[in-house]
Image (cartoon, rainbow, N blue to C red; front, side):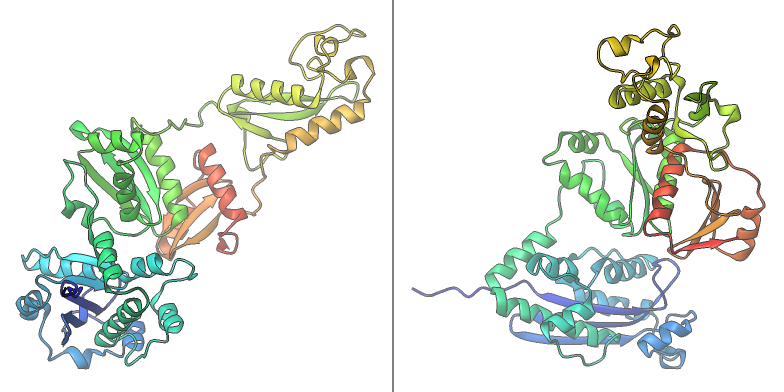
Length: 463
């Protein structure tokens, strides 16, 4: 019996060099393609005149200077030949959203539709080598001992992808790689009212996305450091999760707002949910009725919580604030829970009324340690109360004035835990710094507090 040989579809390993990273603003300077068709390898490469400035750092990285491209054809002049070269082949690139996105945008500007099947070698590496800590091209080169001919030149990097494919083929076999092609290239089902072109245009960048239902009503707002991947995650989840299925059936349109980094996305998400009130988000409340506890010493030296209402609140400036609650009811519920957990006296805390010298009701049911009748020392009662409340202490603003946090190249300006805005140059920084006080928002306070205690603590500039 004759054994049938396993073969692939035609594979085009593609790399490009560009003047920068933005599809709309920047342009392609070089394209390199190595095609694997059966056992044959075909090569196509072309320098492109971007008809725009090439930044110095890009020239140093790629070695492509303005003089090298000034007499080369524009993208429009090679577009038909390029499309023919890629037609009917699987488009393979490393971080394929970048290379595919640039080529697709370049075709679109001259009225040519370009929709190949796309396979990303980052995803291929993650799938086949899950224990490898990183999957960037330099890591793949070093891990698999690939031969570098011209790093950061289009054809040289395309050749590295072909070498990596051969490594995978040797390790796993052609049959396995055909399965992988089907797994990575197969598009997951999109909602019936969303087309692939819209999803393809969503960048894999930080920001917020908005799902709309009928009549442009906001359904859901989310944030991600990789917008397109997160949106696609909703649609993939629709196959197994009821909430995602409900969302997919109702969505009619998608919009997004890019941010420079994760912190900007978190702050924007909080603002957008409050402004637009999407039906499928957990409702975030505005901070108009905020209150907090302060601890004041009573006549007998007993610490007693006093409620500080919105008009007297100065979060970030007052050292003796605990909690931050959206309502008086929420504040009292918290205090009751603290009293019960630490066996504190509700009479001394002002939660219930009592008579001097008589035990409170809590003592009678063994929920009070007896501070009301001298069975627990005042100092111990005070210490336990302060220990419990310190878990929710409102942190005083740790800087002398406004600060800016570097978030992916843009500057998020804050003062006293309030978000003043985002600046992209020195003039905007100065303007925001002197703009005056902004409204305190509890959700943003929590976001910023966590950020300053974590990855962003070394990104702070005091203004």
